[in-house]
Image (cartoon, rainbow, N blue to C red; front, side, top):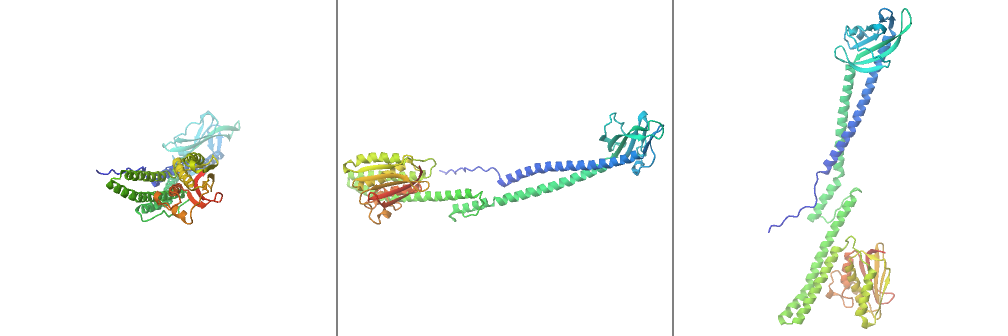
Length: 457
């Protein structure tokens, strides 16, 4: 059967570098576009205001040289220092209109006329089309001219001045082109800088990926990087995951080795019993095999549950329940069993594993106690709870504690007097990040088993 390749859980959605570059480009395009439009509009207004100011100066010069003749209407009594007013259709024009339909125009208008004045007295600044269909800028004002003869002495005259917009439009267009090129160059430079910054900023992730490839290939044991503070938590979690996976593999290897070694002798004895036809002996060995398999399955399950979020147990409730059962079991030994501590204690373990750990410790103490066993649930170190099980028996002989707690010790390999379940307790406690110590009790004088587990009060 052809194996089916595992489907990846990670879905790739394009390049982060490309995505950031595109977003930055769009943002800068909008920002630079709005800024450029604002700058261009401001510059256009300044240029047009300057052009209007020059036209106002020309109009003042025309008005200063003008007078009002009762018959001919508005006339110039002296020349205006602007030669374009004398060149026909030059693009510089003036026109004065007085009451009675009397109109005077510059020579440049030739036989043409500017638009008729508006009836209101408001100043007029607007764009019009000139005699040669060229764009003109028109200024219109109403002024009081002094009459040369007759009365009234001052009469109202409408003065119009028109100048071609071509030079102004060329200046504005040149400014627009320059600003567009400048902003395009600035935008392209900023996009390039952003892309380089993104590539440079993501370099630690690329180095982490390269080292992870080496870790998976077995050429490297750990991820060793100097990274920015924003990426450090991710790298730390990856390193913790690598350590957790390595510990899981090591636990699995240990479990398999212990199971294989534990099954060797019972299987040999079972085979011999079957060959001899000793059914009771074979059944006993089958029970032993079942017990060993169940034991190692529990250890494997504890290894899988170790560190699981939300796993909590109640040490006081578990200890009191076990004490009740052990009192009945050892009722003929006259052993007094006390459970002391605070009911608010919580351990971050699976309840079944906690029961197995406490059961092994308390049962072992009952086997060796003379008259008294105490189980105490106390606060431990930061984030830990401390469970003490003490008896008044002979305790461990010197040097036996290390043998009893050696990693991988099986039920049938525990040192005499140490209790068959001590190795199980040490293994389970280690899986949850806890510890087991075997000491000489100061209160009752026998063995003191100190179990520390992650937890809270």
